[in-house]
Image 1 (cartoon, one colour):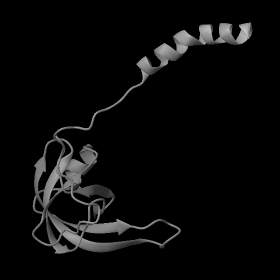
Image 2 (cartoon, one colour; image 1 turned 180 degrees about the vertical axis):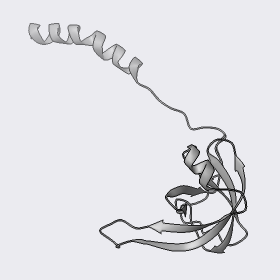
Image 3 (cartoon, one colour; image 1 turned 120 degrees about the vertical axis):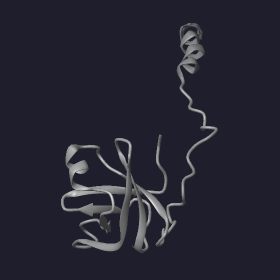
Length: 128
């Protein structure tokens, strides 16, 4: 009984301070307006292309060019990629984004716009 009381007495400071080290993150009050993962963007929809910001991307992709959009399948599901549409580059936006417009097909967020060896992720929003 004395050992249990001593153990609890020694354990008490640890139990009292352990909750002080917990970290919680509140939900943001104002976040970007995300589209559903299932949202289909059709011709005329404005999208953003996120890229790495390297010089290769900036030299390869220019304003008014048309890029093919692809959905990549896992290697064990399908032996390749499938073109699902096309986008036209409207302008460069900062270091990591291009503004574009869907001109053909139906695409979804997460698809890839490609030209040669350069690829950009399709997204419905631009992060500041």
